[in-house]
Image 1 (spheres, helix red, strand yellow):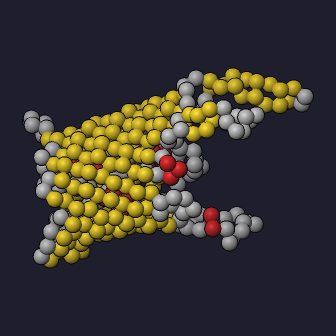
Image 2 (spheres, one colour; image 1 turned 90 degrees about the vertical axis):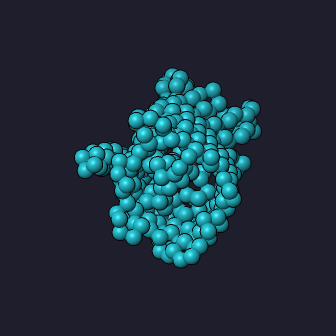
Image 3 (cartoon, helix red, strand yellow; image 1 turned 135 degrees about the vertical axis):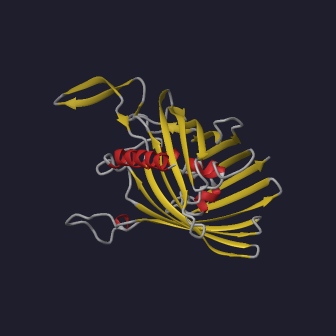
Length: 342
């Protein structure tokens, strides 16, 4: 077991290190950001502080080991009402593997749909028609407990973006671990998500530029862009367990390759494991660096904060979850999910 744990730790840290090497000068340069939206209401309502919780299938996109600590078969459908009429959705089916291999498998899908958008050009600012921006990821995840304390989850997914008549695609991978310390119910989690080769739109475009009195048009290939890789570690424990009540708290640290490091804090209250209330937030670890002459009163230079709330109910084998998210200066985002276990 020690050897397996060591290999898993080295793998996760190595992948995280490769993500770090891309982070310092690539802010805002990654693509397929729908992979970071998170359609799970439970995960979102806890401020994405979930890597150390990892105990239901809806968190598979943040820590693939989350499918290990459930029994039977589970199905989940999630929908996110996003800004400017965009929608993100996901579907997950998780089941045990009845063989000597053991463990659990999950098949999952995530998609983002923009709806119709007006297509404009430099000369036709009122539009020449409509186009859509659609993205999807279809994948498989496998997880297994190696001891009663240590478990590993790994996943692979096909990722594709379609914009008007252009598309790009690649394959991405997720790795996650969970360790139960044996003290109280303290768990330690670690994950690297969306690790894979850069993407590039297929085909070419005409790059037109002015040179003196001449206009020059050159056919060029599209540039490439990185995936939204994220390394995250977290802890979780039950702060209170008495009678039918339970209070679980989680704290995560995340290092994405396109943003500042962040701290995530989430709390879940459960009554009789049927009714749930959740709240959470995340914030940048440090305020953005400013240069001489920057306006210190500019709100864009403040440390970023975001709060989220939600709840859910489980009756018999059915579950219903909801989460609310406020996006500064934009519309609120709402997440819903339906689940069934058998």
